[in-house]
Length: 377
Image (cartoon, rainbow, N blue to C red; front, side, top):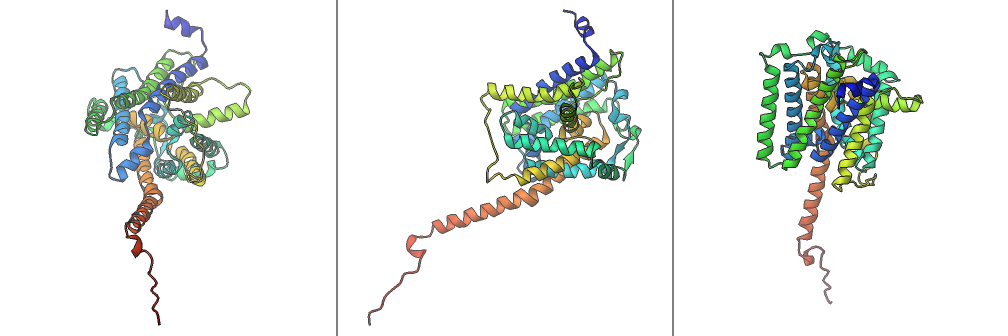
């Protein structure tokens, strides 16, 4: 079958949506199977318990970097068409937005991608949080919160020519950096005995990001219409897709329109096949307020930072965008602060109560209450 002949019968939007769907399915299946989650990695790291979750994130990030940089080296990806490397960006937005997003994902139970993946496995808590993230992101992009976002972003702007740092590295530096990341991740995963299937799934999760860059670049080079070169991201695409479904009877086809349903469907299929699908609702213990607050922080923070933990952090980081690396670093800091202020102190207090109760239970019964002695007169 001639692929070019088949795609020649389709419109630009249809091809973009098919590419987005293919990339989304790949990401959804393997992100669900690998347990890929920046929040989990951050919590392990900041508690000094780096292990399997941290290794999974490293594997995905390393695979995204090495795959993307390899395709750039071979000329398959045209960096001149990547807007993050050509348009102006905000360093203040990356810092403030990253801090807010990092704190928010700790409260909400996962970053934007993890919320979407988990919602497809029956987790209603993350589905509600994901919808809040999407609505707040839209309000931050074009609604009532956009003036505040624009004001913070204007504090420290950088030109498009200064956003990429590949020119700071030696020849093939980006590829070598990707190889170093992946080799370290493989060593770290082996040291902590990461399940081989999880490790493989994490690598494919990261490679799906490189695949997105590759396929959209191929489409842009072979289309008569203007095609945006991009890859996996969640908050902006989710907001645009949701608002399009609400406001328009016919949703214009694009990469994002295929990506978001693709991730959801991929995660759902993976959960059903492996029998990991399970309905989960809000409980008195889980609460609602922390999920809501976390989702609000992520929605606003992601629009400030230029994307979510995947869109800005991994996808942008893979093409060596300096604001993406700053945003990712800020997310790690924000997550550490939130975990220390909210969860770690609560866990320590709970552990102290359990320890006290255990100590009380160990006291002999006769010593727990005073013995009343009657003295006969």
